[in-house]
Structures are given as structure tokens and as C-alpha cells.
View (cartoon, rainbow, N blue to C red):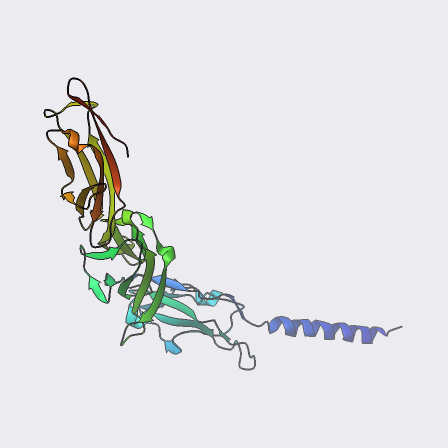
Length: 338
């Protein structure tokens, strides 16, 4: 059996240890500053809260201590309650953009519980000063155009400079987004570490139906009034001709009186030259869209081909047959087959 005196001493010892433990609770962060963005001239609060705070609060930017100045750097709340949050007013790129740390000194001379938060980036936004499309090494100013050939791969670049943080660049042809064909690279501008140049390189296959459409580059940034700045250029897509025929061939024609025509239409860029021939002959019958029979004659019977050519290539031959039949009343029957 434990003597009463020893039992009381043991309990007192345990109670003393508890008091010592409670009296030396270590301070710790309950909230640390986080990545934050702010527009120039605006105010922002960097949060820092300390549980069981016993030391003094200090702030550093880029590892340099920052003093408190009325109207610029001020405590945002009651430090005695453990809230060491910092209010920054009239944010400026040169003074305030950087890595911020909240620090707390030891709660007592013999207690090693000083604190330093993880560095938190404060970004003072600056909108991009320009956005431009570059083709073959040259800037193409709006509303310029570039000449490209259908069924080939084209490479263009979009450059947006002067922003902080980096803008997001997106590509569109008309309203169709084609950003999945692009990749973006970023670098700081010469002489500064806080202004960026963003370059997006777009590689895509040119299609004929993109002729005369607008290729747009959009630079997205929160500091811009409309959140974006864009430029655009027109695509001058060159492609080989594609031809189609339209005929004016009534069912019955009177030889020497009536007329007929075949129209060859070429969709091409640059414009194409039309060439008409009669099958079986190399003689060129015409270089115009219309091949006319005026007046119609039985010697016009036969098959005719239309071909279109430009600097990009030639169309397929399209054929039309004129079938002339003489009837008792010298009327002609004209039949077309393609």
C-alpha cells in the first residue's frame, strides 16, 4: 500500500507538469498567405493568422523586411488576437509584386517557436500592351492578310508583350477555336523580371473553305477592361479550280434559227482560265465561260470538254454532249449528257 504522503506528492508532481505544459504551448500558424493577384492601384489583404501567438509579427517581401507605413502597409486586424494579416494599398508592380512571407518571433527568449510562412506570390497585374500575328518572320498588322495554299500546313505565331502575369493566348478562325493546334511559350522581357512576352505558335492545315475568313488571336488577361485584347488577319487561300456546268439546251431547236449555250463555272483562287475543246480535237474553241451555238447547226453535234487552270493547278475535265437530230421540219433535237 502506497503511503498517503507519497501519493499526494506524486499527484502534485503530475499537476505541476500539466501546468508547465499548458504554460508553454507553442504558437503555430492557423492560416498562411496564399497566391494572390491584384490590379494596379487596388488594395489587397495577405492573410496570416497565428494560434497561441506570443511573438511579434513581421512581413518580408523577396526576403527583405517591410515596415508599416500609413496608407501603404498596415495591419489588417488585431495582432493581439493572433491575426497578423497585412493590408497593402495602392498596389504597384515595382514595389509590391513578389514573394511575401509572414514571420513571427519567438514567444519567449527560451522558447524556440519562431515561425516563417511558405512564400506566397503577390502578382500585381499589368495588361498586355500589344498583340500581333507574325507570319514568315514579319508582323502582320490588322486588317492585313496572308496568302496560303490549300491542303498545305501553315505556321503562324501570336506575340503578346508587356503583361504581368502571363496572358493566355487563344486562336480562332471566325468563331471556331483551333487552339488545340497551338503551343505557348513565355519569357520575361529584357531588362525586367516582371513583364512577360507570350508567344503562341499555331500549325494547322489550310482548307479551301477558309478562304477570306479571319484568323484571330485573343490575348486573355484579368487586368484588361474587357478581359481580352485581340487581333486578326484575313486568310487569302489559293486553290486549284473546281468546275461545274450549266446548260441552256431546249428540247427542240430549229437549225439556223435557235441558239444554245453551255456555261462552265470555275471556283478558283487565283481566278482560272477556261478552256473549251471538242472531244477528238486539240483545237481550243473558246477561253470564256460560255460556249455558244448561235445559230445552232447540225455540225455542232458532239461532246465538249471544259477545263480550268490557274497557278495552283488544273481542274478535272467536265464533258457535255450535244446530240443534234434532224427532223422532217428541219427541227433539231438536242440532248445533253454529262
